[in-house]
Amino acid sequence: MPALVLLGAQWGDEGKGKATDLLGGSVDYVVRYQGGNNAGHTVVVGDQKYALHLLPSGILSPGCTPVIGNGVVVDPAVLLSELSGLNDRGVDTSKLLISGNAHLITPYHQTIDKVTERFLGSRKIGTTGRGIGPAYADKINRVGIRVQDLFDESILHQKVEAALHEKNQLLVKLFNRRAISVDQVVEEYLGYAEQIKDFVADTGLILNKALDEGKVVLMEGGQGTLLDVDHGTYPFVTSSNPTAGGACTGSGIGPTKISRVIGILKAYTTRVGAGPFPTELFDEDGEKLRVIGHERGVTTGRDRRCGWFDAVIARYATRVNGLTDFFLTKLDILTGWEQIPVCVAYEIDGKRVEELPYNQSDFHHAKPIYEMLPGWSEDITKAQTFDDLPKNARAYVKALEEMSGAPISAIGVGPGRTETIEINSFL
Image 1: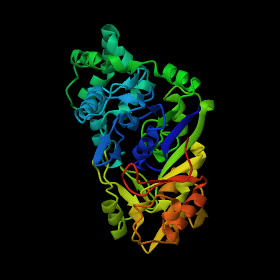
Image 2: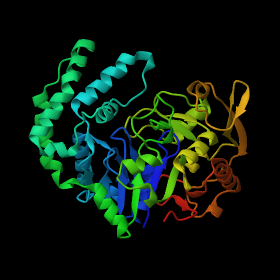
Image 3: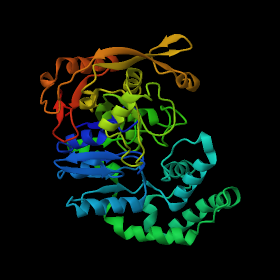
Image 4: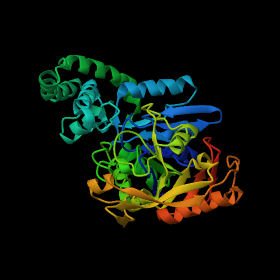
């Protein structure tokens, strides 16, 4: 059975947790393939709400094995805290697998993340300050600490010492901060080894064997397409590849084994942090979307910037990810508007542009060109089929599908696990 990829098609926060959880009961493995605890998913099961930051959403599905892949950066303190919180609520976390090749976030990564962001002043990027970027930088610079290093004290000490040799110079001489003790970091991280050793495995081998046996593997991205370090709105991006290509490198599963790539689209658009956002609203409509949609970051706690649906971005996501399907979320939030604007193109220097400009300056100056679609006032949260939706809601979905370039196979009409209309099966 080929693998599936599920990813954000905007700037993140599209509702990937709900989509992954919906599929979790039908798949054998759910793999988080990039990012760290700078991402967050909210999953509603019955009357229970779960906020997940590092763990794959599949951990809430009893028959599913959740996997943290090699492309993830792991803060062990956050991981253990999140596991403890779920255990206290009766969730079985014993099936979790963690790649031994995943890199670790350390206290010095967090410190550097915070001081460098403050140092940038008005040019700050809007990072979460959780050490994600510095951990990935160390990975690329080949001075990173991996999960497997926790089980060899000598190697761990050598690697931490090498990493802090330069970083302490930076902290003390440039940022006027105290040097970080090598021994303290090593001691703290050796303490995590015993607590996570039973979860650590060769996950790439396990996942490929599972696929060979006909098992279903779902790969889950954090953040979204426009936050991809290569294909996003650089430099206002994350430090990894949430796009479909990242699913292969972050899990150890080859591209020929992937059969479906599902993009999660919110029925409007949001983003957290700094950076360009052509359809952003600064009026009552923007505030209404924020309040009704509960648009506050699961991990950051920051209010999300809100705007109308951007079809240019959706088409771009379809192209760079090779999307086969869309899952449209939060359609219910748009109930009550007489007319709903949809951005179909941009105006840049007086010219109409229908594809995302590759030039950073052009995108910063892009003005949305809107098409007005009729709204609806009927409650759609009880809709079970596409035909149960009001006429104008159906027309809105069909218009977005045509503009975005891939079929919409599922629609979220409420926050709950069951409040989803399935048009076409993903499996």
